[in-house]
Image (cartoon, rainbow over all chains, first blue to last red):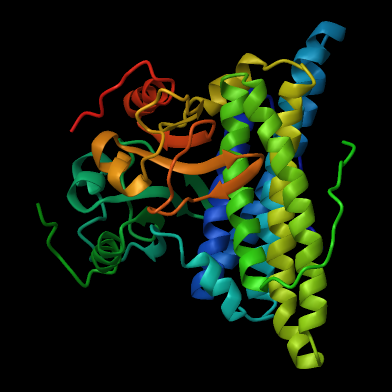
Length: 203
Length: 203
């Protein structure tokens, strides 16, 4: 698949931060790709492809940072493992992008794919917070979605930036795209709350 | 990494079965590889490498089965997506094997790797059912480990064969290697029960 690489500029950033983001993104991408295939959801699939270019960028930055960090043979040896795990995360994200491309290229989801993916008990959803949603302006801590409806927000896409595993203090905003995981009923409720179709948070 | 491929013989088996096993195995392998890295666990890492050869075999069998199943251009087109998802599962399993090889090759687990993997809230364990264990001879339904201790057995390795997502009717046997996922406390309990150090199943 042609890669639309972002322009990469070296910025000092910790190996740990880069590495953690790569691992989290690659896992999220697999979940998103499976969901995209299961629901034949083009937007989700496009998110996966966008995230793939992000992981490619992170991968370059990480390799650069590791090279600069390694001052001698001992450092280099110690960092080899990190580099291997990072490239594994890159492979995983490539695999997710391959699956997503089936949807964006309109190859069509064979019933076998649906049959295999629908064994997933938990469901993922992608929903956008509308201006009239009760979610807008609240932080995740006060919403307490896990206890209230068995749903976890695993990522937020805001102004084309991705926030993976958002913290409790994160405030949701109108226009946020939420990726949430949870029991089918909770996921359905969250969607209705985000879209402003339901205005009351139940206890 | 050198691949020790099993001798592959074409046996008629459904595309669906092959495909489902590939997907399940690739996901299990990622979990196992992360755990192997987190706990620097050589046995788990070796399991991952063994499973990788299994996925390679499944991948060949699946491609053969798909070729035989496709009678015309329409079939072929419909099956392209299945083939793509299967090769994505293969890539994911390769990535897991790369991570596992860090442990088996003694490259050493950099503290950064541990830091990144230990964010995983749930824990995996690998334990062997001893002859004097209360688990031996019982089926998963009567053990009801999920309700009793918050633990799921996600795979059993028996006589070098892997049973992925074992069914409720499956009887555990002495010598079985269990891969279980769950809360840290439950996982610890299961290990003690399997090793015969604890003889009573609590309610």
